[in-house]
Length: 373
Ligand code: NM2
Ligand code: OGA
Ligand code: ZN
Ligand code: ZN
Image 1: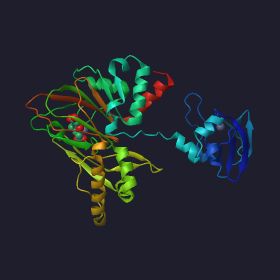
Image 2 (image 1 turned 60 degrees about the vertical axis):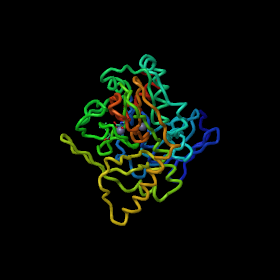
Image 3 (image 1 turned 120 degrees about the horizontal axis):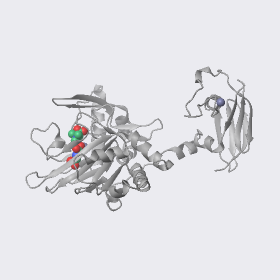
Image 4 (image 1 turned 30 degrees about the vertical axis):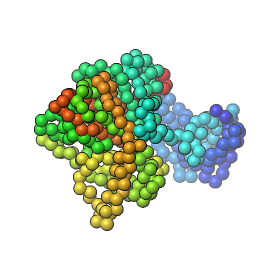
């Protein structure tokens, strides 16, 4: 990592230049607020001690200089701060530095069938390096397949708690997906399920779903996975207005049975503050009537149907047949999942599933990358 070669005070900003030619400007208030010294940040936990509101409105540096390749600033409030060259780039507000901080999803479709993000439970459960490799691939693709998961009742919870924290819902800590009489959900029948996000009627929506195959000899029941992020980018390219509409207007979702009454509103496509696709919430089965101003309804349906059409394109569908002992792990708001119908009279099909939050998995991967687990 290159060091700094120049620092200069300009109107409202400190401009720094790295030895390799990169440059960035930092506003005074931002720099002072992010002082890293022991008075401003608790040395044991790094949490901010300084109250941002206590800084004077007209905070400004009296002096900014490069010292041993890093930045030293003397402030009008008498404080002194030091910022490492690498830290500055890691937090710089330039387009290049900000782009480098962005996670870049790897888009996939039918073609990924022979190169799946894949792990082996026997290896993952004894080797932190294997677990890290698996989770890193999972993060890029938004799903992963794990082989050799013992077909024990509730094993899915053990896997979930290895990677994060299983979230209990009205469906329990885990749920059985099989065809039953008097089902409270279409998942518990033998019908085909179009690709979807689970539980968009819940707030917060589950971030991750695990589905563990215990039995599968009924004809049919193949799994289908679609990269919702890629389909959203396709929509943005072909129908920018439809894309913007699905990102703006929230759709209503609902679920009710004897024990629960759940409803939530969320846009089909969620974008972040820079316009990047952040999440997809698509579930035709649980969609409630669209609650929108009259003039928005038909254009919204056009956009929604266009998006649904993209999700159904064969080149976007990864199809696989889960075998007993395989476990599918999906980022629920990216890797949309579905299944073909199956025939429960000619064999058995039994999966167990559970939900986790995304943050627990991100934390696990970060810890493994630190070498701490
Ligand atoms: N189950 C399997 O979101 C959904 O309603 C999909 C979820 C019932 C927990 C099914
Ligand atoms: C579900 C679901 C898929 C399957 O339970 O949410 O989508 O393969 N199941 O049965
Ligand atoms: Zn300080
Ligand atoms: Zn589902």
